[in-house]
Length: 297
Image (cartoon, rainbow, N blue to C red; front, top):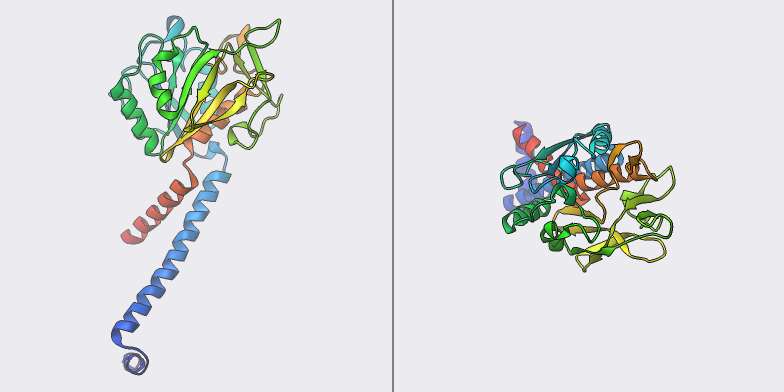
């Protein structure tokens, strides 16, 4: 009771009731806002600095447009080594034989559009819009094409929406015309971090990528400067496009492209980059979660 009397006297002599209330609200908001920002920053740093193995990510690989080589170019076939490597590092890979219009990609972290898993038919306008919406909302998209003689037109309705198309074959020098080893990489990009084997990546019979202002090259064929890998930022999501479908494939010991050069680390880096949201998105998610917890408490 004494405290209330003192508080009334303080209001009377120093501020009007409205001024006092505004001051208390502003001070409280400033303090709480500062705490929320600090929590958001901590969440961002935690996600960015913690190995992907401590998190669980999901990958949806589309096989609905026809799988090449008697159904082998999918995660349970030639890409099994890739799928197992991702599984060892916190990624679960599943396939959809019905496509993104039936199996909605919402709820997945990364989706894969791979030419050798889309060998028989092209992506429709409706499918492309579903993919674009997924990326715009924060999803990651991996696009893998192949040499010019392959039906890249099947996936270009997707890639072209992010400023990327496929051009002529890229070949290396004699005697291995189709082997593409390169260390001409954008070292500032996270997909090329932590390389420990040869400090280069390998592709086989890759095509050249053409990019518009929507995308950025990140890897080039040595000697020619032709683009063989590119990235794009679209809305809250990320896109990585590669000019080869074979670089992460393995059929037997005589055909093992997955383990060449630093391809295993390159694979893990790529999927991690696509799965982890932008820092701005993380901040919004962190603040949203904090506000929700405070509201419920």
